Length: 354
Image 1 (cartoon, rainbow, N blue to C red):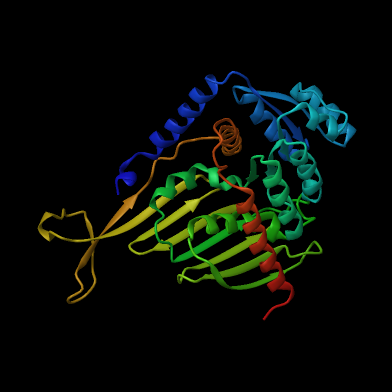
Image 2 (image 1 turned 30 degrees about the vertical axis):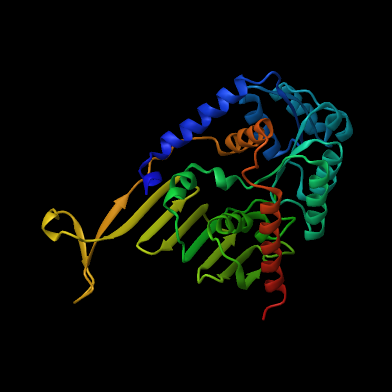
């Protein structure tokens, strides 16, 4: 209860200030290189340029046109090969297409480099298991880029999430050819799979799913129902053929409803509390009478303070902090594996329904 009384803004500001102080006390800067300079890769490069106390050494991309453009626009050095980049840095930020994640990550880990790798972790569960083994043997830090964990709306809502029993998510996007090389489950739904797995502390006992391919060879629209041993149910919908962008999650738990808008970065909370002293209620207080012998409950509407932060920059800062202080990463390689595992089970249910 005490944690709920602490302002989320103060928590985030405290963490940011703490990270800066820790970095200022370092005797050296971490050297970082980026693999992949496409749309998301450029965003990572721009974020890395803003982070103090790291040394962004350069990037590698196999497309000469991209290399020329990024060098000119962002003023950053291009390496001639993946091997050259890996040998020159301590940390490798992998923002390449998913099909190349395993080769890039395994090569970096075998060279004892810490790795940040965009979601999905890799293309197959076998590759994920191999990466876990390699990372353990190399004793390197690995963080998976499930960026919604760092969305300010989610950060604001997290202290209020205590016992979710029904979760409904909608992740809808306008069509974009980029990303259609994988099913919408791996492209979009996996974000919500990761969020659900991070807040429901129970095993999944049943998965149901349906989906349809419309403009690509794999599902472009999908729905999945995850049933947990503790009774919680999560209903997830994802589409990359929507008329508008939407990233909403609704969480229902005993005496509370939590609405998180990841797209608009907004959070609303409705809580119910037992009315102990009806005489102390004001004329504008909202009261629900549950019926004879069941008492009354008061409705509370809350809007947690949203601290505006750059989620990608924050997740990268958090990763560097885990390296510098030898702590667990915020989104571990095991987390990435678990999300990928459920994603593939959803795809299997679509391809081979009960």
